[in-house]
Length: 184
Image 1 (cartoon, rainbow, N blue to C red):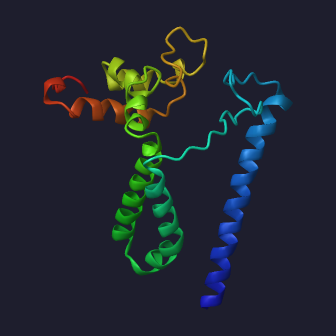
Image 2 (image 1 turned 60 degrees about the vertical axis):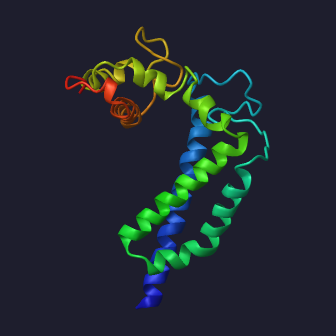
């Protein structure tokens, strides 16, 4: 019985991995095959949308934290997943993810956090401009095309509604001075 369950779990994991790989492959080959215009970054060295990243290996103050959490996750994760209940596992996973995220951000020191938060082309700038979350959600699809007249910052046209709404709520609830009963 346990062997059948082990086999089923492994089979599901392989199916999930293959499906994810096929989705990535489709994202790489569909645009050129179908003639879709994909606006890539000017400094894109790969030249293969949607892979718009560039290699820039860095080591900084957050590197040891990120590496330590990564190694601990690989070493201790499976045992914790078997031993902890769902609630505790969710909390430990969230804390590990948060620590790893902060470790990676802090590779650049304090600027790793503040540069993104102060960047006018990121979520918070869009969140600051939102006056009505229902209107934001209602008009979301209309703002997706890059040439739409109401398209906001470079990241805002395709941001999932939940991300922008979360940013709006976080920004507005963070300060009592900005809290108004009519914001929602």
